[in-house]
Image (cartoon, rainbow, N blue to C red):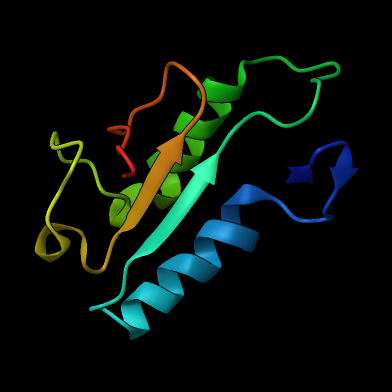
Length: 98
């Protein structure tokens, strides 16, 4: 995980999604909104940012909203992570924020 060029000494898998999934298991009426984007220039990567993200979703994506509505009702996203992405090639539905 990076914030700009600063490495946060954490990784998206267990450090982020693992904690969020545990939170949503303990609090099933809550919703987590998350904005993701490629913040750092990749160095020596063997796959794209979207490919890496999709591999995390294969493991941690059970609580990610995957509906087709870009403006869903709260009842359909309770207990879910709603990802607002800023990159192409992902396996989630982008959400429109008003």
